Image (cartoon, rainbow, N blue to C red; front, side, top):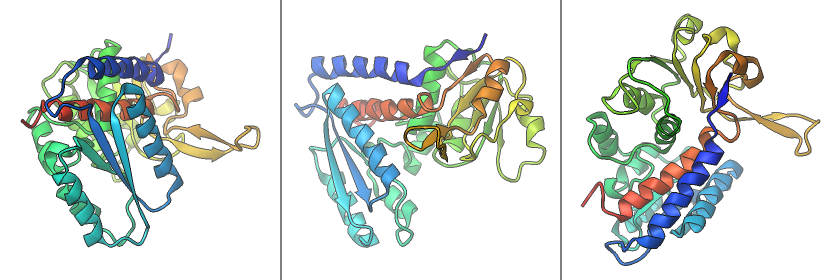
Length: 294
């Protein structure tokens, strides 16, 4: 029988654990952890994501700040704001919410963040530390997936993990984490992407299939072997007049078609998404504790 990897339920459990830790801990700087977010422009999805993160901070007793800037802010001005946060001792960690406007070099902004405050885990130094299996802030979505697997006692050692999608945010770090020597890891990993030939041949061989394509319901049951563990990272809004909101949210995996064939599967919504938010809180807690960078 297929079981759900319920990220909504697990993320709530972890938030309660963080809330208790925050309440009982005396932090090195004498105050609760403080997360800041830079939001550029007026993208609706970005606003929603940041609001989720701020509400989560409030729930666990962390301080939070959102810095909002107009779409036409210059790259130099944004870099100046990043440096202010780097230098602000009242901020433990911060994120720059993507996407940024086309006239701004996202890589340059990302690399300007102090690695000790990079709670999104995207700075090259943190990616390098992760690759070497050193203490680091893990990218939030891959970290959330690892936690889902670990907390549900899903065995990964010796398994074949196929990751579909090679983004720097999910696919590439996910492939590294699943191959490392760790409790969740020790997989043989195949990383597939847009140039992969005969994708079905690869996905059909997966014991653990992690899909981060951004293509609605792309993975069907012919892509999945019986008993596989399916992690669906994608989320797409599909118009649906039968829904009160006029749309429904679906993942990269055709859930109804695939669920009877697999052993575990993440729902969309309520799977990976909530785990991404709670992973950001976990990294912020580590930053406040000076656990990674002293």
